[in-house]
Image (cartoon, rainbow over all chains, first blue to last red; front, side, top):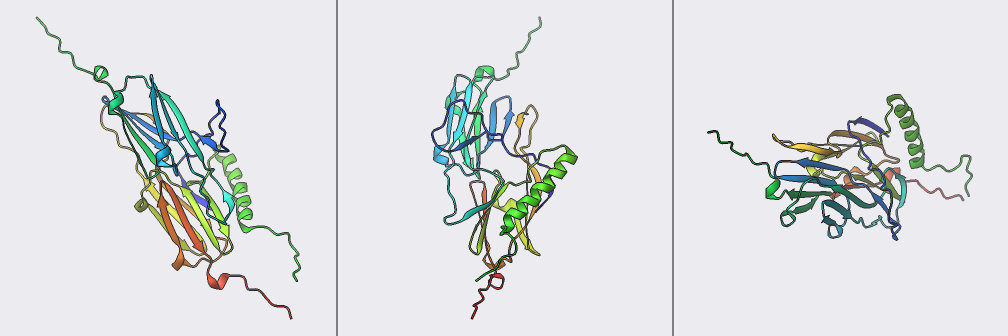
Length: 134
Length: 141
């Protein structure tokens, strides 16, 4: 087996548990891209194989938490002979430095990626203040 | 009746062992602890193998599969998000760019019957063993 070209860094570290999970599931930190624009934050969260309905996004005070549960679906009657990745849940939190308009949050899940748009509240949008000179 | 001279070693385990060995050498040379991309799992049952790979953010049309000389080749590419003026990355951890990977198959595959599906960022390839490659039982009279 060979990997000809790998310009890519992967594998999320396993999350350090602070609260014990009762399920026999590992929880991983998903890889994310976060872009900040003057109007909003855009997040892409890699959560391959999660059950779309299980995805939870919560924003409490300024802490954004993303959770997703991955159902353990194994091909029936097959034996796992070789493994490079493990199946598990995803969870990660971020502290946001700006106030978010909670009603304007948009979320979608496509091809294993959760995409979030978190609009900033109007007050924090940069505004040009005209300076009058006399 | 069967006589075995060698311990039973699954070809997959052997491949895994060799790969680990090779990775260790390269990692030591480059100072990197990198797993090959995409990470994949291999499942087997009788004369069928299933290879699954995590490829979140790719679309099926971004992924190309081919089989040649007993190797399965997976390649693909994904562009990172493009930024406009006044936009900044606060985190950029998701893999982007091009990748290519070849996997040695443990048996000859019936290429007519290969099935590949892509769902929720997971690629699933079913590889049935070719009829002429299946082991034949020899009756002892």
